Length: 73
Image (cartoon, rainbow, N blue to C red; front, side, top):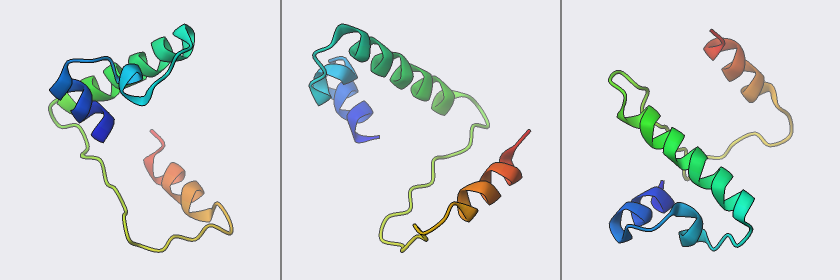
C-alpha cells in the first residue's frame, strides 16, 4: 500500500516509484495499481488485512487452501 500512497502524494506513476524501466512491465504494474485502488474505493469492499509480526506456517499451503475455499464465490 505504501507505493500507492507515495504515488498519490508525489503524483507519479507507481511504476516510476519502484523504478520499473520496461514499458510493458510498467504498464502492467500501473494497471494493477489502478485496479486495486478502484476496488478499495468501492462501497462495501473488504478492507485489506496485513499480518505483520505474526508467525505464519511456511511449510505447506494449507492456510492458503483454506482461505481460497472459504472465499470462493
